[in-house]
Image 1 (cartoon, helix red, strand yellow):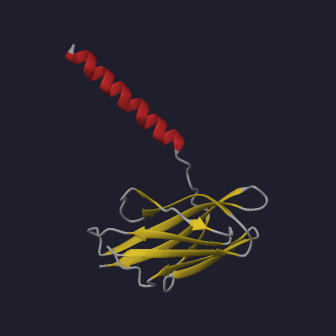
Image 2 (cartoon, one colour):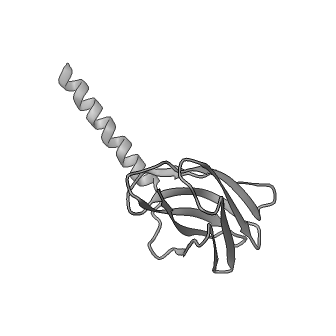
Image 3 (cartoon, rainbow, N blue to C red):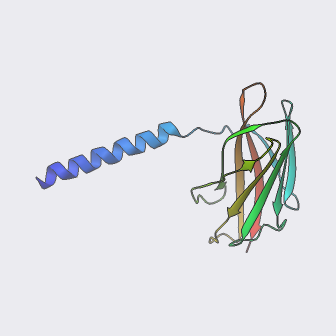
Length: 144
């Protein structure tokens, strides 16, 4: 009986893992990106211009941050998240909100980690008027 429960648990764990792997979209390494300077940067790719700004610009850890995203034309954000580059800390979901599809805001909280110079990337999947999904990467560093 104990062996059947163990096999059932292992099988369930394998199915969940497969589902998570299949459900995640992979962001190609050649996705358009920019490195933030003073908490801001811009990407203009395939006719989609996006400006990102963090407040405060110093991007402190363990403090609520505000991310502002502005676009020259209306966009839909399909998904967004932050993940570590030099240390994997999981995906931190980012929930952008907008009233007009051109000006977006989201809160973000980054926790402290053991890396003194932590590199992060904000990944945003957007859909423009053409309906094509594009991934944008915004790379930034935090210090502690």
